[in-house]
Image 1 (cartoon, helix red, strand yellow):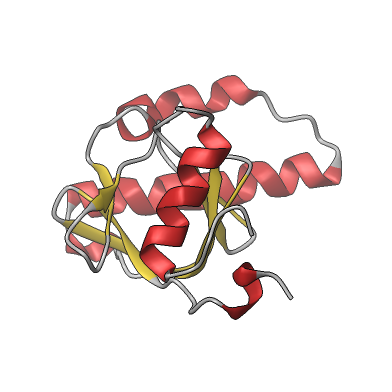
Image 2 (cartoon, rainbow, N blue to C red):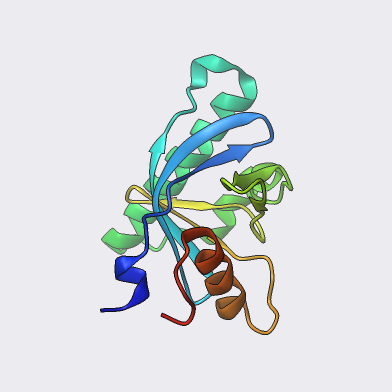
Length: 142
């Protein structure tokens, strides 16, 4: 059995600045990309920014549904959310006081959130794995 299977689950939260966007469950990295089940917390009635974040999440989900159906949606459709996707406001606070800062904005697909690990030394995969091991008490590689 690998250490991934026996390490404690990593549950965190996804923030955009001071706006709590979602709870993240069973967070783990794979090949330098972080994955987690997400439970939306943000609501469009909370304000303009919150409504825009909700619109982005809904768009991600719907765009990927069209992709799955074979509708060939255009990736340029994401351009209308550039201020959200490219923002440095995305963050995932960790219990030890550090933060995971993505390299670009997250993507939301079928109840799962994913984002690229920002560090690439010695490789993005190794950097993400070491961070996961530090946060869970596991080891890397598993």
